[in-house]
Amino acid sequence: MRIRTGVAGGLILLASFAVPANAQKKRVAVFDFEYATVQGSVSSVMGSSVDIGKGIADLMVEELVKTGTYSVVDRKALDKILTEQNFSNSDRADANSAAKIGKLLGVDGIIIGSITQFGADDKTTNVGGGALSRVGGRFGIGGVSRKESKAVVNISARLVGTESAEIYAVASGKGESTRSGTGVVGNSSSGVGSIDMKSSNFRDTIIGEAVNKAVTTLTVDLNANADKVVGKKISVEGLVADATGGVMVLNIGTKVGVQIGMKLDVKRSGREIKDPATGKVIRRIEEAIGEVTITEVDATSSVGNFSGAGTPKVGDRVASAQ
Image 1 (tube, one colour):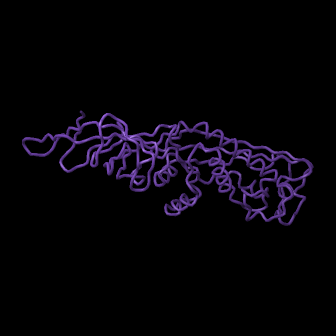
Image 2 (cartoon, helix red, strand yellow):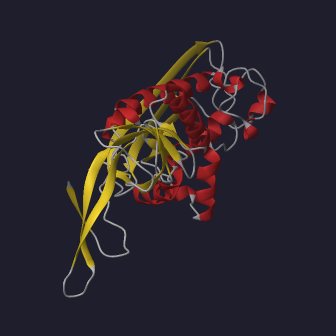
Image 3 (tube, helix red, strand yellow):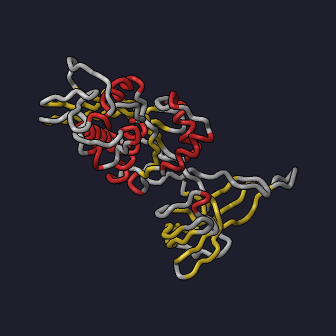
């Protein structure tokens, strides 16, 4: 027997339920990386201004999805929220702004980052003008060809919690690529103003190789810190809609946070204790029937397997395990 405290006609305070770390991936979103400190280098390497912060964020999403440590929010959902909140480029590396957007997205963490080096690791190279599309196959930085070119890319990121803007982890990634007989941007002849950093054309350039190595290294670092992310606590309460042969159907689903693998207590209301002065219910005595483990779920209902000494029936209450 368990005592359940409440008031007449009101809902009872719920216990918090946290899905074990090994049962649920932490949900994250990736912001466009900030690259103000290397904007000059970007223009020199690419021949024009390119938003490499967005490009690297897209590559980061691909790599995180591929490795599977996190559940990554779709880019369209993030862009919609950013537009609605009038999120500016200057907010890309701000932890507090990230936490605000993260709450609206319902994620556990936001990845924000900066690009600190992008281009050739040769400080003596004379950088000149010239767009990639005009120079063809004989260019390096700003159109200057070198017998041996080395591209270096450095990026850093912070994994920020959405509840308090706490920085869970700091990660970094560095990529280098050296190739003889070509320039930093390789032999591509496409215009870079509309370059797709996820394309094979870009990946095959020296700077593309360096970018991808940096992103891969950064992803490994972020994955290693996944256990530091505090998952959102989920509390649910509902009723048994059907109980047949050890299989239960509940009247709650994903809309209130029910997930596959979640375990819920099954309880049955007993006698009520009333305040003798007011007649209001001040306590309800509940009987513990057993536990249900969710195996299927949709928006408004869920199915689970029952275990326990009691026999569940329609109308029994289910609630997050305490």
